[in-house]
Length: 318
Image 1: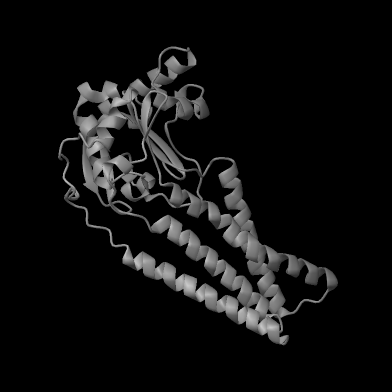
Image 2: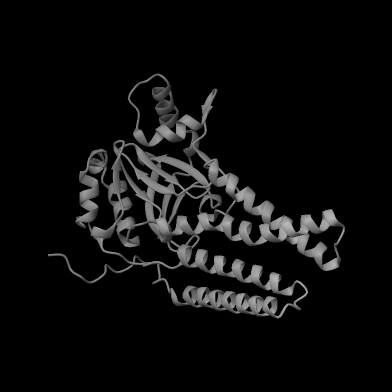
């Protein structure tokens, strides 16, 4: 019988404290409520001179930020193995990012577009009527910038440059789809798996610095197999389809600059920030390390055996 006690964190990690994030979210929520109430009160008096509208917009904006922050940041750090959201798809094991975090990021365009869009409409109307003072100009410039930013973020979402990330493990290698980047490595290129603290607690897949990881012969061969309709690793399909460049294959790239990505910019290694994944962080670490160190077990990544191994916690202690 499995123990109900949580598995100790790997060396180098610390238990993530969620109370500062909860306090920050609560502060934003209270501030949003106060601003909205103040705006309603000023507008009810009828002598707000436009200040009530600004307070209402500010309150809606802060409320949206609080909701988005709560969805993105606040989550259960440790979860039982049977709660892990893993799927078996196209001959590979897929571990997605948390849906709550993705929902929080999806809210961001509306957080900026709705309240500042109303201000922008008012700014355009005042500009058309020639009834624009100094305050109106400042509000107009700010609202224009925020609407443009929200529209840009929306475009990034629609074209798939910003998307819900995932880790895909296949018999051939490891693919990490981050929020705004994509990378792949064969198992043979991975030299070590260790706990790390890049962008928070992470799993680092260290590679051989003496090899050209992102244009290795193995990957070029896999791309060639794909183009010739030969057998190819499933994890390469989507990545290769978008990156068919004559003469070579790009397999490490940024898809958007919408968010900073220290885990991508860090270097040639693959870095997995465990806070994003819909799986217990220690289980994720043990899962990746097990298949990196056990080549004979990698074929089961193409079947349901790997998902069952994770859910039943049949992974060696690391």
